[in-house]
Image (cartoon, rainbow, N blue to C red; front, side):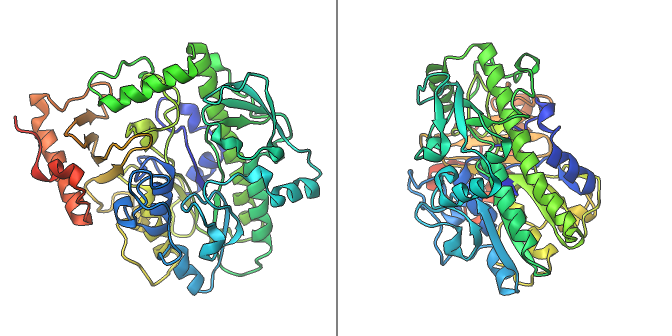
Length: 478
């Protein structure tokens, strides 16, 4: 189960107080230091399908806008194919978003998916779902306007809209029962499919379109949180000293677009967290169905996200942009099933890149295609097992091309971007990344050690992007 954005960073404890994460943490393993391989959707999703870094599978942006591949190809070897060859039924329900012209069905999946990003509310399958369940056609009422400039109070009949998700940064109330929300629609489709399988082995992905702006929330989650009780990030008013210039450009874009006061930002953060809770409640129904049909003892359940969500942080931004900040990098990653010790927490450097080799190995699938990810099986059996010394993450930019690489080791984080701008943070002392230590002589040894780790990771994985050649030549001289 893969969410989209996930407001998961440490300054919002309520982001953890959600039903699916609570359940899986109690019954399985919580990888509390998990981070995304690249904090935008398509590259991260392609990595979860291939086990490869974006530079290797080629999807480095959402639509190939800066020279990367625009999508996967049916000839690519994806993680579900060894399962299908071993006799598993393979299902996909929800957002595909790794190919602008094909859906998951073109890659051999059963279920429900759409080409490109997709818009579920206008599909015949969704209308059929409403009819069979006796549900009304949903209407979204704009609570906070975003990039589209739609007036507050504007009502949108979702089933009649063409692609309302292009309206990216606002908040809306779903004026209909919660079961009309796309997340509950997908969970019902997945539940029906699971119930139809009998004893057939299965591989299934459920990928809701949320949480993601526009934050569309239905009762009883709507107004679950008092915006005045929602604390904004400590770096909300940070003027981004010591940050690269593209961070300030991104912040300035949102200041011009939203023009929110503090109360408005609190309300947006509250709706983002309510959206998280709604989506998790829908996905929890799938877990409960697995238990009810008697398959829990033989099923590995995984919950994660494409990436995080920077809403209400880093000087006042939404979404993710080209930022490799902890708000966009941190993700949930929890697993439950055979071979997973209940109630365990692992704080080692892991990623959604590690999911493909993990599920292949834990399910006893012999074929292990070449992958950059590493199986988490040992860590679930013994959290103190030997593991990688650090983890590399990538970025190529979203609204503008900004090639970057990050290296995590212990409590330290290094980010290097094209042009040579360097960020160095001690996340234990500075979890909100407000003191860039890259130029501090006191931390030169840490910088050099992290740089060597990043250089080695790039070399070992064949990540030789000429725009980041400076990384391979070593840190700036003293």
